[in-house]
Image (cartoon, rainbow, N blue to C red; front, side, top):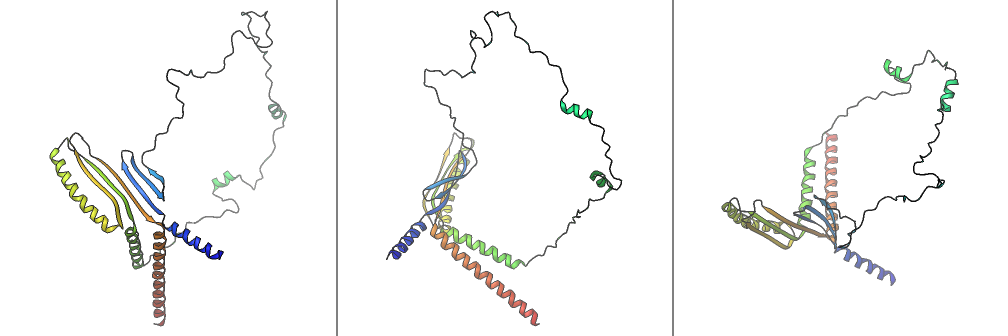
Length: 285
């Protein structure tokens, strides 16, 4: 009985885990481009064009109160060092240390007493620098030769089939993606040329409906969309604010990966069978 309870609990946990949504959020505005990764309710920023300004950790002093800067510890003028007597007046100068006679270090003395070296090289041997100058390589060294490998090309048909399969996989992934939010706010600058600004406003309003229709046919669904356009007759440059959020359930990702992996395995198996068949026919002839 406990085994069935554990099995049911595991199935329930997997079912709940498959409902977790994974996605990405893209925002563009005054702060530049910001890309966030979404895992359930958790959002983590992975890319930002403009870095966030660091906050200063200094504590602000309360109003009406000034904090004096810290300085190094200074010795009071009234105190005297230990060892000084009261008889020594202000005119007494501090005692200077006696100059010690400069003595040569022991290492220099040892080198002076050491007899000159009588080491001579054997006539048959040369130092490594001389050997390199003469062009003779040292014993045991191997000469490296650049070996150019021949590049063997393949038939273009299998590559085209792989590209076609990749495009089908991308299309299947896009058809299951859900657009949670699509917000576009475009401000047209109309100070320099108000007539062209009015024409742009009409074109954006007409193109926005077409864009929404294309997105609805391509993606799974669009939960919330807002495309706004306005004309600012006092602005000299156009402004745009964009927010796009895409998500997909974890269960959909696993099911799609299994389906695409099985289709890819079948394609490779059929390709190998065709190659073996062509090889047997060529050998029979």
